[in-house]
Structures are given as C-alpha cells and as structure tokens.
Image (tube, rainbow, N blue to C red; front, side, top):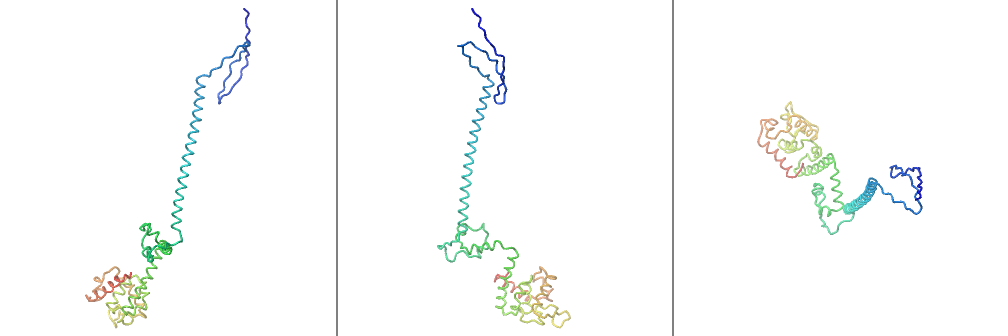
Amino acid sequence: MGNKIVKIKPTYRTKSFDGISMRSRPKVALPSGQRRKKSVLSPKVTVFHRVIAMRSHFSVVLTTVLLFVGFLAGFWFTWQTKEIGAEGQVLGATTVNESAPAGGVQTEAVASSSLAQISDDRYFKMTIDQIEGYLNEVVKTPQMQEAERLEIRKKKLKAYLAEKGSPFVEISDSIAELPHWKMVLAISNSESTMGKRCYNNNCSGIGVAPGHPLWREYPSHKEWAKDLNKLLEKRYKNWTLERMNGVYNQPGSRNWVLASKQVLEELQERAIE
C-alpha cells in the first residue's frame, strides 16, 4: 500500500466574534474527493448566541410596550385638555341666556357668597354683569370693603337723622367716620335729644353743666362729636351704658339709660353698621 501524504499548513488565523478572540485550528489539506466535516461550536458559544437573541427579542417587546403606553397617555391628556377647554368656553361666553328669568340672581346676593357655595346651575344662569359684579367683590381688599361699608353707613345714617329731625344731619358723614359713632349718638339722645337742646354746641353735657368751670364750649357740632369720641376712647372704652350710668352722668338715671338704648336699637333695626 502506498502511503498517502497529508500536508499540514501550520499557519494560524485569529478570528473575532463579539469581542471574543479565537484562534482557528490549523487547516489540514485533504486528498481530493474527501469532504471536510462540519465543525461543531462548543456548548458555551451556542448558549452565548441564544442569550444575545433573547436580549434582542426582549428589547423589541419592551420598546413596543413603551410606545403603546405613551400613545395611550397622549390620547388621555388630549381628551382631558379638550374637556377643560370646553368648560372654559362656556364660562367665558359673552352670550346671555335669554331663557333665564328677568330678575335672575341679584349681584349683591352673589357677592356675599363664595364661589364654592354657588351651584353650577346657578352660576351658569348668571348674566355677564352679575359675574363681573361677583369677581369685583372677590378681588376687593379689606380696605376697599371697609370704605364701601362706610359709604353705606353714611347714606343710611343721614336718612335716619333726617327722619328724626336732628341737626346732626349736617355732620352725619363726620359722625359716621368716628370709631364710637353709635355711643356718640346714643348719649346725645339722653343729653340733648340728639342735638335739639344743645348749649354752646355741647350736646352731651361734657363738664357737668353750663356755667360750671369744667363746662366745655365748642365752635361747632362737629368739634363736639370729635371731643366726645376722644373722651369715650380714653375714659369709657368698652363700657356699657349701665356701667356709665352714675359715672358719666351723676347721680345717674334710669331714663338716661333707656333713651340711650333706644338709639342703639333703632340703628340695629335699620341695619346701620
């Protein structure tokens, strides 16, 4: 038998697969007609390929899920925005519902209520003027509210004094601005029938009696009212009429208390505050 000569090429080649370097086996030159057997990868390399494939598949699935969730979130946000915009258009509409009653909701009644206390039906039935009136009330500062109350007090007090025929009607605005304006009027009713029987423009008996060394004279009713308010603030602040009786007026009188209380009750009945 003839010996077959097999030539071996000793050259090596370096192959790289995903960062893993491997050296190829030396190539063996086979006789003609003989096929080379297919090489089989090691189990470690096969598992590595499977892991890479699984990771790629998981990435695709995760990306698809995230895109779907993002689409749903965008659709929900768009729908909510349209709902809010529709409500805003209704609230800001300039058209007036002609089917609403002519009387409608009074602006003063709306102004005294907070937005949380107004039902949706009542709010949508309000006219543009009523809504503007309500908003004007909401943005008012305490100083603005106090100034408005003072104006209302002046008007009501002037009408009350005119009804009583009191000469104080000429200084009603000045009296209304005094901190103790109610007590000024109440005491003046006991001492001078609300300015009808004054001496030296002293309408509350400050200084015992006319001719007494302590008797005070004033150039006008306005100056008297300011002086009495100052005396009440300094000497009788937060005193009741019952406590003042016998101290402010000596020796004191039950009728003095009754006449003073009458004015306070009438002011309360007329809601003059």
